[in-house]
Structure formats: structure tokens, C-alpha cells
Image (tube, rainbow, N blue to C red; front, side, top):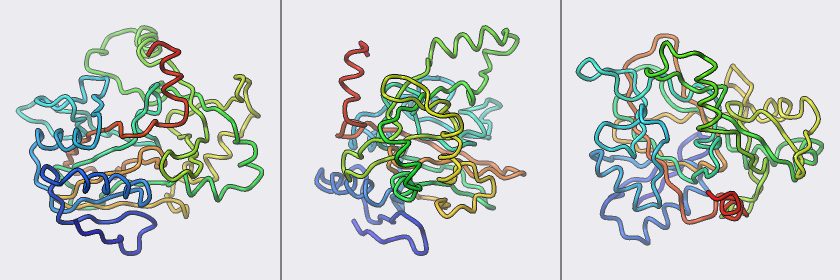
Length: 302
């Protein structure tokens, strides 16, 4: 395994000569420790079948299957498919995913630590994924905002960016909304928590699903605070020129792996989209997502 910093990038390293299926456990442990400090790993020269890809995810931890079947790979439900291509006249996966700043699964009671993306069909023009490191961004917040965010909680919900499914056509909107609330009710997570590996505070809010800040007792914090913090860290910058924003490019054979606790991300969509297909596998790692979450889940009977 050879590790090389990405030239001229705000974060991330390239990892070459890694055999995803045959690498010894010690090497995989080193790989996971590396992602927590470097944030993004670009595993070069990978040639994995869908089954191999899922197996690699299992070597890293517990693979999470996405809760909505319309995103599933037809043969391996553990793979989330983002695609604007049709196969045999049928849509496989979902187009135009991730068009907003988000952490994966932050709208669920038990988020996961690692996200893996394996591009399959890559546009020839502008391509990539945008990232913000919310460990670093939190440290750079004005002291006043850090003080207001300390010990706060965020309420997250998928309702803003829920994608209508083929089965929802002709259904009453009220019925769809009621199902969304029943299937994915809003969840409450600490808005700032210590990273289980680095120990540094992580700001855990996103433009996509965070809609309310509260104190520990559930009382709302001041109006405008959430918007002010999102703007300060770069999530409301529609020009994508904020100093915190990193554009991660990729090429055929790259497999991206990143720290889903500290990074928010969004897809780079262009006005004239080219064919694109990407496979995602998501993994619960060896660490509690944040201190106390397992106790919360147990108390809630989850």
C-alpha cells in the first residue's frame, strides 16, 4: 500500500497498490485510521465486481443497506445505485442524487462512519464531488457561534429532499407525506460531538436535512442561528468558491472512501448532464458514531 497526498488539494490522499480483497487485516486497519485523519482516500486502480465491492465493504465493518429499494443494485441490495442511464429500457437506481449538502444517513437514528463510492460510468466533462470538512470548519467558526453551538442538538428530517418513487404516481400528496413521517420520523443528534478517533469536535449539521437547533432540554435556540452557521461554513455558497469547499475529482478505477462523520458532501451536477453511474456502499465502522448513541438507541428500543 502506497500513500501519496493529493497535490494542491485541501484534503485527501491517494492509495495505490491496495488489493481490496486480499489485503491483511492490519493493512485494512491502517486504511481506516488513515481515513479519519486524511478524510478522503482515493483507492487507485480498483477492478471489483459488484460482489467483490460488497465483500470489501464487509471487510471494513457492518454494511448498511439503504432503506428504499428503488436505489438498490438489482443483484446486490447492499449497493446504492446513482444513475441516469437505463438498462434494457429500465431505470436502474435513481438519477440526480445528492444535489445538496448532506451527511449520508444523518436523517436516521443510527448513521454510519464510512462511505465508499465506486464510479462506474464517468462523464467526460466536469465531474466530481464537493466536500466540506466540518471538523476544520468548526474550529474556524467565530468564537460567538462556537459558544452558541456548544451542547446543542440538531433535529434532522428527510422531508425536504425525499424523492418521489414510481409507486407514488397518482397518490395523494398528503398520503405520501404521512408515509414519509411514519417511515423516517425526524431524529435528534448532537450538533457538535467529539470524533471518536481524532477527539476533535465535529459540527454535525447539513443544509439538506437539518431544520432545527435545540438545547439539551429540547428548547429551540435563537432564530437564524442554523442559517448563520451553515453560511459561515460554506454550505449556502451557491458559487462553490468558499475556502472550505474541496472538489474531489476521480477517474476510471478510482474508489473513494471518506469519513462520513466529519464531511458533508454534494454531487457536482452540470446543466447538460452526461451519462453517469456510481455505486455506493456504506459501512458502520469499529467506533460508536458519537458518544452515547448506542445507549440512546437501546433506550428507544432500536
